[in-house]
Length: 326
Image (cartoon, rainbow, N blue to C red):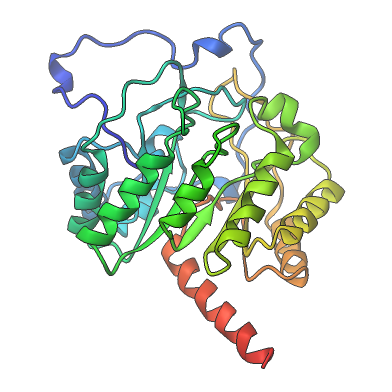
């Protein structure tokens, strides 16, 4: 995910001591559970990781890998995989699970689509993942910015396949249709959690609006792969997860990701429990039985983790299904 914020040399800038999440300061502290062995990752130190970091910094870009504190940053950046976050590093919503800053965003950088596309070209990516903060302040929710970026990537790196992870475009008429018309290869929009947790975990969103958004993508362009993901460990029940799977399949979603929620700070939503690896494996088996073309269900699964390899498998699985139906 890529964005252009402060490109000033940081050593000349007075340190910002304001809290990252002022909207959460009034909330009581919650206990952060000790991570089990299967959830731990090594600190990034490789040369290729440093090269990716340099390209991102050189273009003044923002990645969700950094902003959301993704545990897979070392592995992905070593492989020169990065998820670019466009339209700034400040979100207009305040989800209880998210580590991205909340506040009033800066104006869009009109050169950002070109800068991101140029970085993707220089990194030689086979598959690029682009996401964004929520921009409820914009009349189209940032849809036109997504469109321009897809167009720029097609020009700068025509061999690169494009996966977008979008906001819900709530109350932004025509926004979704414009983005779908730009023909990304994969359209991802995360449900994040089960319906019963929305008021507490994702208060600015609406479960059935997000579900309908994914369904509308398929109705407009059946060739686009659709994808959605959830976190577990927030107090949801197994039955609720299975119902969510059925909801996604009713919307003809191709790919589901399921990963462990990790609490960014004591002010964020509490981890209720760590799901064991064998439980994730069981959910994977069930999801495939329900008809998903692709399933990624592990403790460290994130929306864009192994996205390029997963896209290749998606295409293979669709082709295999088409062959069976002949």
